[in-house]
Amino acid sequence: MVAIVEGDGEVQALPVLLRRLSAWKTPQSTVKFETPIRVRRDRFVNRDDEFRRHVLLAAAKCRDDGWILILLDADDDCPAIFGAQLLERARGVARHRRISVVLANREYEAWFIAAALSLNGCRGFFATSGAVDPELPRNAKGWIEDRMSSRSYGEMTDQSAFSARMDLEQAYARSRSFRKLCTEWVRQTDASGSCGVAPPGRPTSPTD
Image 1 (cartoon, helix red, strand yellow):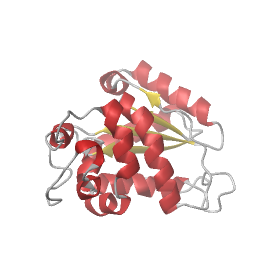
Image 2 (cartoon, one colour; image 1 turned 120 degrees about the vertical axis):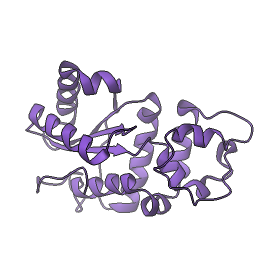
Image 3 (cartoon, helix red, strand yellow; image 1 turned 180 degrees about the vertical axis):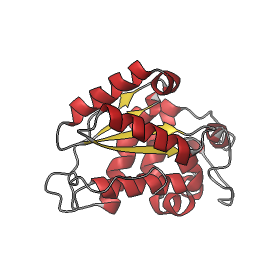
Image 4 (cartoon, one colour; image 1 turned 90 degrees about the horizontal axis):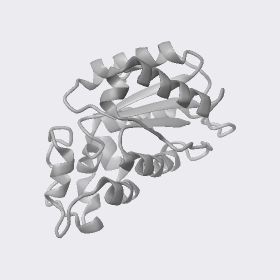
């Protein structure tokens, strides 16, 4: 599978998270991860030539039996509406590939907030309560940084470490967008483990 992501941190962190997700949700499957393709969100979303170029690159890298995961931060966009729009556009570019769109609501770091209590002590992070709605803070990165005891939060330095440590079940229980990632993973992954991808099935919706 090939992922399209918007940050340098996600290039390193997402494969860490997906390998853990694979071991948790589909332990009998084998999935080959290509290095994620990093895009600039505004240019990828707003320029048709950039969108087409990167989706076609992902389609070429994942080959016939692979699939494409587009993972972006929702920011202030509605994940359901914006995700559906992106999925329709991507299918128009690469109809010969299976494609998933997941929008982290509002940022990738919201998944860390969902599993905050499991991250206590990791790289100087401490949270006294896990009661906050993980998809409410507009600046999820800032929420994390405010709880770093002696240093600032850095995507390149901390995102992979948090992805390796976070409690996946906590995140699944508390974050709808993380559940969407899990749902797409299970749908697209061959439960038999024979080739690491699932046969084409019914179209999926960003709100499933």
